[in-house]
Image 1 (cartoon, rainbow, N blue to C red):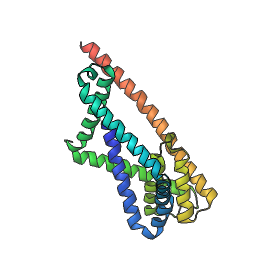
Image 2: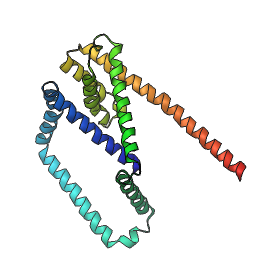
Image 3: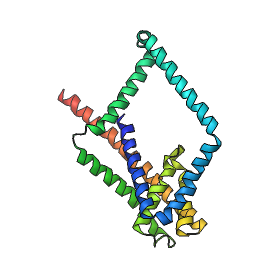
Image 4: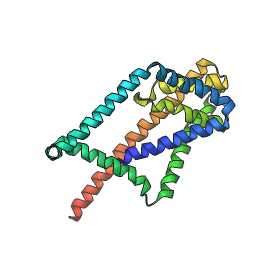
Length: 224
């Protein structure tokens, strides 16, 4: 629940960034976002409107049936392990969502969130200087690529592979007139460098946690 709540808050920050970028660079970014996101979405929605209605009807029917069964066989269901696991999951999810509203140190939470997203920005902006074609891009351009490019990481593919490259390459080519080959190389470079950093630092952190837990367990055993 806490993890999902934290991801939800990150999604809010991302949508806010996208909104700010579109407002600040409406002439440059507005048409691009419309062509890349809204037009394909609306086109897909209009072409599959009947399918959406069927899907909505099926989901609504499942919810109604489950609700009726739950009320009628509540006592029997409570004895099932699967029911208890599902109940525990949703209870944990709801508790996690409430953690944001009941934080004791909200300012610290917001500060950490700002630092995380600022580091995300630096991971994008600094890579501009690795290539001559991108070295003249500004701070606002870094924010633009961070905001819109992050949509490629939201797509349900492992690590945003492919989707992230496509969006970032399209931004560099269509907005900043950077040649397609260089744009593709830059997108690959930034994604690879970030992925390697996460793997290395993540593995280091994992073994550090194991080491600290073993140390705490050893100290607890000695004190006992």
